[in-house]
Image (cartoon, rainbow, N blue to C red; front, side, top):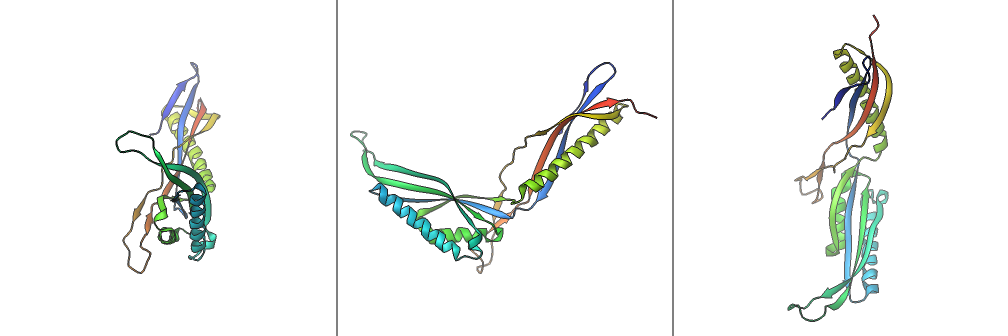
Amino acid sequence: MLVLGLVLMSLTQAAISVLGTGSVLVNPDRAVISLLVESTSQEASEAMQTTSSLIAAIRSGLLEEPAGDTDEFNTAQFTLNPKYRYPMTGDGSPVLEGYTASHGIDLVVKDIDNAGSRVDALVRFGGSAVRINGIRFEVSNQTTFEDEALQLAVKDAVRKADLMAAAAGLCRGKLVSVSSVPVSRGPIPFAPSARAEAVPLTSFEQASQAIIAEVQASFESESCSD
């Protein structure tokens, strides 16, 4: 919702305060797949080694995929936790059964058209040890579009200030202050898409993303010269 206001500064002068909004609609060009690779063994070292071997096999397999050498394989987290078996009756102490090594990874797919085939490949190479936690779509040159949206927001603030001043029988004066207003960004939604059997089992339809900027601006008002 846009917030507009005339703030009384004195008996002869009023400040014009406006919220300007700028929006640029863009199409995501890359995907980030969040996955977790887990293995459990009686010994902590074995669990870690198994997980490392699985990740190495996944990375090697992905390199054979179309444009696989352009992907980024980034570690997001790593945990090693004991696994206990607890008595059914509540009596007695828990028994240590082994250790679970978990390796969280963000796979950045720079060719967004390969996102679906990458999910299939992860399951194929990692099997039941791989859990796909989610996928999000991003714009690689986000800053460029954020700058464009910010410029549009400032222009929108000037336009609204002119409109408000005219409605009050005044003219917009010089700029007093302007500041950027934080805008929350939600995830880019995706939806599964039914395709022919010749294409990967998993596919996605990417939605366009609106990059939004807002500015709070204040202007002096003045009498209009004839």
